[in-house]
Length: 93
View 1 (cartoon, rainbow, N blue to C red):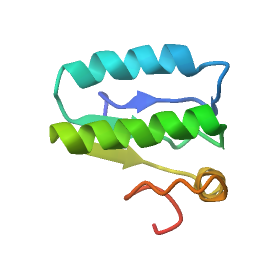
View 2 (view 1 turned 45 degrees about the vertical axis):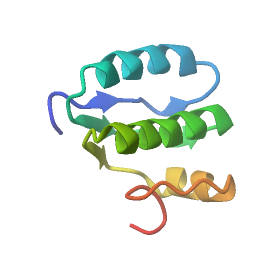
View 3 (view 1 turned 180 degrees about the vertical axis):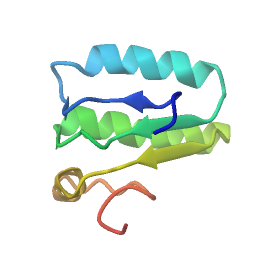
View 4 (view 1 turned 120 degrees about the horizontal axis):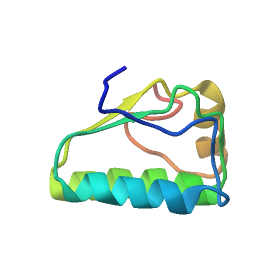
């Protein structure tokens, strides 16, 4: 794992989304490559899935390199069930 990677823990839900959003916002404003460690993330609700998708879109629009590390099959299944497809993250891996 990259030492600059942002780790999400096991859940990305409405309960912890605000703290994660602030952390991601701070990192995105630096315009440096973003590395997100999803290896421990096994649960994402709609708020968490939306945050991941909007982070992807922001990086695409601002030409910020985004690297996903260790997405679990559980997370990929939850995103697919919600109809959220994020290139480089999900069941196409």
